[in-house]
Image 1 (tube, one colour):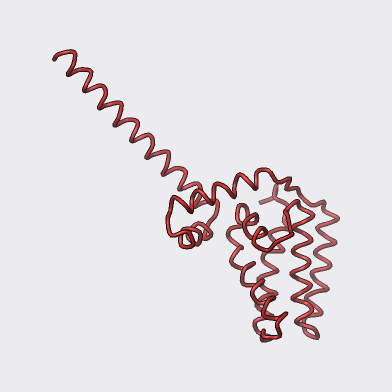
Image 2 (cartoon, helix red, strand yellow; image 1 turned 60 degrees about the horizontal axis):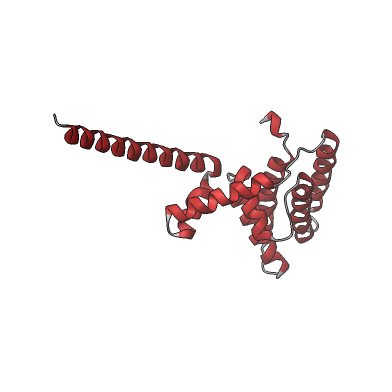
Length: 180
């Protein structure tokens, strides 16, 4: 075999190895994003209309989340919030709209104390998606019911559903991360 032929074979082999390495790396990143974001991965792909754009968006969320100072709540604070939630649920029978508004505000306060920005709903969703992607749809559904309630358009059944959804998000935010 001539030197030129040997060099050509080596160059082709290196190119094939680089292509395979890149493919394995990309598939690993995709698997990581799917596992981390759960259903939010598919939702973002659908919204973006392109897997690459969606994955770029999700990586941006991870980077933003990495800059946040997310912290655990003390056992006393978790108990205080849990007691407040119990009171909110008990008031639901007599004042469902007020209870749903209170549940939304309580979830927002817990988020804020844990270190999540709470100024805009869209930012809340984006930031929660990184660690709480599996309950994010519940948060969206609860928030949508809250908006309908504020406009006087939610049924009692929708409000009940909102409380169930808020409770799922609330419990996940309240949980001690080290015990999960």
